Structure formats: C-alpha cells, structure tokens
Length: 339
Ligand SMILES: Cc1cc2nc3c(=O)[nH]c(=O)nc-3n(C[C@H](O)[C@H](O)[C@H](O)COP(=O)(O)OP(=O)(O)OC[C@H]3O[C@@H](n4cnc5c(N)ncnc54)[C@H](O)[C@@H]3O)c2cc1C
Image (tube, rainbow, N blue to C red; front, side, top):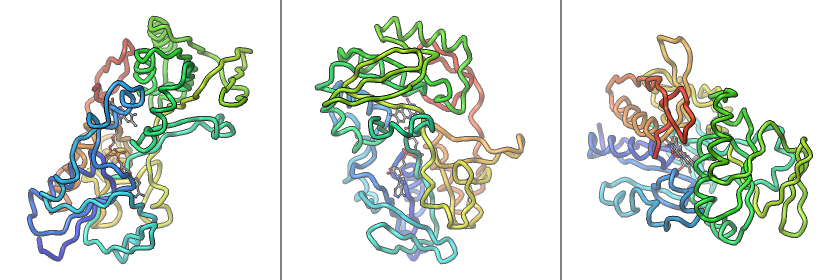
C-alpha cells in the first residue's frame, strides 16, 4: 500500500474501531480517518442504561481515549456528519460543506432507535436513546423522575427496566410484541417475560396498546385500549434499531434494510465495504441476506472488512444459531452478546 492511500471509516462503534486497528496493524503508511457524528470517542453502548440510571459514571463508558488514536496515527473526526457519498468519484460530502476524497471506504454507521408506525403520532412525547449524547440530559431527568413508563419489547428494554428498578423508580412496562425484530415473541416467551418483570415489582401491561398520550405540565398520562391510565414523568421507547443508511440512499450503493454486501463484506462498488449493524450480508448457502446485530458481530465484521479492503479474501460466517437465555427468556439466536 502507498502513502497516497486514504482509508476512511464512517462510524466510531465496534465495527469502525476494529476496522481501523486492523488497517493500521497491516499498513503503516496509509492515511486512516474515522468520521463520526458523535462527540465522544469509542464507548460501550450497552453500559448506557447503567449510566442513565446513575449506576456508573461517564468514565466507565470509555473503551478508547482520544489520545490512543493519535498514538496510532489514526485521525478521529468527531461531531461530523457524512451527508452523501459519491462512489464514482470517491468523494464524501460532510454536512459542514467539506468534501473528502478517499481511496477505500468502510461504512460502519450502525443503527438508530426504531419507532413503531402506531406510535409516530406521539413521537414528541417519547424519549429514545442509543448514544452518549442522548443520555446526558436524560440521566438528569431520570434522577428527578419518580414514575417511568417503558414502551418496549427488545432486549435492551428488559435490562433497562431492571436498571431503573435498582435505581428505586416506579416502573410500568407496556409490551409491544413486534418490537423484538427479527424475533417474534411466542406466547410462552411473553408469559415468561411478564412473570420475570412482575418479580422485579414492575407493573406490566401486556396484550394492551397505547390509545392516547396526554401531557399536563411535566406529567404524562398514557391511556390504553383496555382503559388503563398510567401516569409517568418520562416515557421511554425501546423498540430495536434501524440501520443508519439514509445518507447513502440515492448514491447507487445497493441497500435494502441495510447496506447490501456479499460474504466478503463488499458492496456493489469495488472499494466500498460495510460492517456492523448497518450491513445486510449475503449468505451463499441460504441464498439470502442475514441481518447483523450485536457488539461482537460488529467487531468481527470490522476486522474482516479491513482485511479484505487490504487485499485478503476472508468470508464472514453467520453466527451459529444457538439458544440464548436472557433474564429467563429463551431466544433462538446468538447475535446478541450478554454483557
Ligand atoms: C442501549 C443499548 C444497549 C445495547 N446492549 C447490547 C448488549 O447487551 N449486547 C450486544 O451484543 N449488543 C448490544 N447493543 C448493540 C450494540 O451496541 C451494537 O450492535 C453495536 O454497537 C453495533 O456496532 P456498529 O459499529 O455497527 O455501530 P454503532 O456502535 O452503532 O456505531 C455507529 C457509528 O456511526 C456513526 N454514524 C452514523 N451515521 C453517520 C453518518 N452519516 N456520518 C458520520 N457518522 C455516522 C455514529 O455516530 C456511531 O459512531 C446495545 C445497543 C444499545 C443502543
């Protein structure tokens, strides 16, 4: 590789950071840049729930300090949003009007909280979180709150509820069966979840749904189809994630739910790869795409994308199906690592 190479990674999560490490280990000369919208360097997303509920300080979130990038001669551009890619000319367009040329690119933009179509009309009343910036103000609101409603059904929602209970909050949980995409909750799983939450003194509202949300001063009232009225200081919605690919649409990079890549994590453009939660990966045996979710998958994919970008031909193996037990709920998957 030559010193003229400029490898750019969009995204500062586990996929992007592992890609950058592998690129630097194997190429001492190339320019390597990571661009991220976030204002904080690499941190543990799964610890955010403990940070918001006041159980750990911000220092415990850190995976890598800013200075470590300098030591490895990796340029970390924080607080910068890539708005558009021109894959023919190999140019990135940033929101602050800067254009950057790259020779090879890895898209590792992860996902953002999903909102269910039935809840979009109440969007202004809902609080969602997936980044450190989302949680800074929220931590203070949670500290003051006495009653909290969680609208959820994904894995994060269950563990978050437990963090709130430990922080002595009065918690109500409304379950949305389709929040656990790509898993469908069976009635057996739902019963188990309900039993589990009740044992933690969580008020559960299952087989019910939101009819109306009203706000008076700083208090919310949720009215449900089954005529329940639940009071809350904050309503938190945790319904899984959708890949951050909106900025790619219209660029002629193939996308579906995520960025479409082959088993080598290559997109339809020769020098562009995708890894982590934003990628949708082709499985030649199943003749279909599999979804990539979870910290460990993102790490592995970041490494493989980087090796292949440097000329290797490594295939990413889909995680093996296995029973994964989470708080008493048995899920037939292995994509989520329990931390
Ligand atoms: C609250 C929470 C709890 C979780 N708990 C677990 C758990 O227990 N176990 C588990 O396995 N997984 C867990 N996850 C999921 C795990 O964190 C993700 O699977 C993992 O972080 C995905 O890594 P990634 O590198 O693909 O993307 P991310 O970590 O999402 O990083 C994406 C990066 O891309 C940046 N970005 C996005 N768009 C742009 C753009 N246009 N321009 C510039 N930058 C951009 C973002 O700012 C971000 O830095 C949890 C996630 C959350 C939010």
